Image (cartoon, rainbow over all chains, first blue to last red; front, side, top):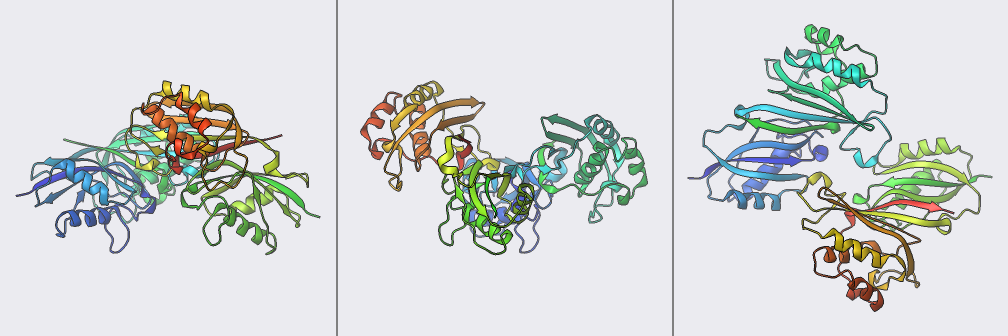
Length: 246
Length: 246
């Protein structure tokens, strides 16, 4: 009896210590599991998400699956979850999937966005956009992004805390666009490692400032050494935007 | 010795009990005065703002004046204030004004904006835009706004808590525009009374839903009775946008 559910949800990362459960800290996983336990007659439920976003990083569309033994329709489950969840998490869709659907393994493409303000400080954006008030050469950044596209060993851009051995990933799309004083980076790939995007952004900003050349990216990748890249960009500009399944 | 300063500042109203000091409650005035006391060698400073915004209402450009006996340049004062202020208040400009410049009496025009989301719920906007997922007839709202323009006794749209006797004010501009599912109201006038804009919005939304006619506005104004208008719209959609001085 019961069903496996796949949910999509958004959250504002500001007041979370990231997605994943960590003891008593306030995390997205913990808040959702507290609510599901309530709905599931006080029986503990574990949820399995696709991406582990870090502290203060946002999600527009995160996905997770879990099993419920009780019978409940997707629409009713969505309503119940949103009723009990805190206001910085919102369940967008709920659907029943086959009992062997494992969300993380079925995810074939992930999209992240990173937003930067280069103009005037706006306090309303302090938790949502990285404030970096410098003139950036977008043309040079575009050339650097081309070096990141494709299949690479991303060791130089990965946190020492990353536990996964294999650092080879494929980036399908790496783009940047400017709208007035805002800069939007967009990355699509088969997967991203811990701090990978924020470390790539940190280095891309150095390229934009003229402190690194676009060609340096190739060398940094080849070095396979975190010390050859620049420092990690702030979390508040990063959004898990979408996930596609096969 | 010393100078009178005029500051412009923005704040996110979410975590404030409004602008004005109220005992131990966290208010914008209180936070700014705490910081000025620190800068002013521990001597208390009172600031005099132009508008008293309510709990959860935002300001893009609020203004206030105050006197400092110490000698400090405007640029340095701005930097010092922003260093000590909490992150939901930001000082935008600081300038020295004549010793008899009283900001509230010199303000000749104030502008407020009210933003509504009529489409999909977006948790990132929950503190910044009023969520009202209904189809609104903008054409009818525009007709109603015309009735509000000009000089009127706004008693029907004013909170019982308003202490000012004279309820006559002039609205120079009252407009609405739609951008996709967002609705932006803009009001400019010589002054607005407590809850006046939120009460006007509450009634304008009823016009947009077809539950009131544009012509009803005229009758409501003539009634001079708060009960003839509709309920107060939420604070999170309201912004004090600008103030002009003579």
